[in-house]
Length: 334
Image (cartoon, rainbow, N blue to C red):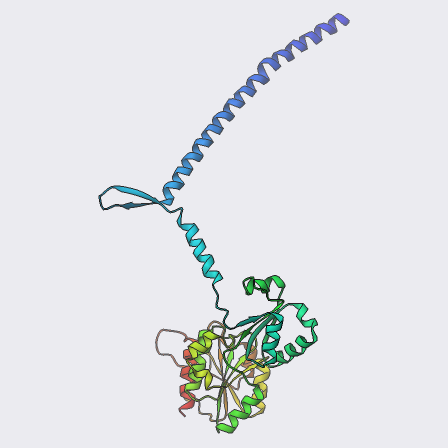
């Protein structure tokens, strides 16, 4: 039995040795050769791809002598990116103030404020809290932001947690605007803006409102462009002769105007009454909505009339400032 077992083990050992000497080693050699070929081919392919990319990035230009030459574009992206970085970093901060002491003095001196950005820590200061609460009730937009966001807005300046943007014109309260308009005209017209965020449109509407002797413009605190330098430039001096009231809530302001005898008229392409056929001569509030969304549904419910401008061409709508100018011309010529 032992001899037969040894013979059997010897045979298996010989078979195993044959397999280990020839089977596995030969397969491994073949695999290694294949892998070497694959790596060589992939390296060649990468070189070809790199050459193709270089060819694509090169532009062909001819010289005056007729000899063709190649000029690489690889140097331009760096220059363009640097120029773009300089352009994005270049901002006009002429109407900005930051830093606790500077901002506090600006708020205490009752300068016209368009917008305030501050961190949560500022509200813990009693003197700032009282001033900010009073300004918010007057329609100044106050936005609480993080420290990093404020650093981004001021391009890394030492802001100390608070910054503001000055307004190009002073604003008055809604009550003051109502009293002024009624004492200076029998049937005054006031323009209210609903969701117009483009400062060019706001400036153009203010210019048209002053040109047609409107008594004031109402701008909501949110979803509207403020009285920035761009607005003043487009208004072309009209802000010096027109009262502007910035309200916290436009719909509540419209309710207050209706209590004081004003009719609220909204401009919409879906209006059932043509503005040329509108004959009311009472004090009016003309609500102008944004180009894309128009007057909001909630504000439309506050309107006594929804008027439309009859268009004769193929163009289906008008720019908000153009629609306001046409409407004011019709309403003031009656």
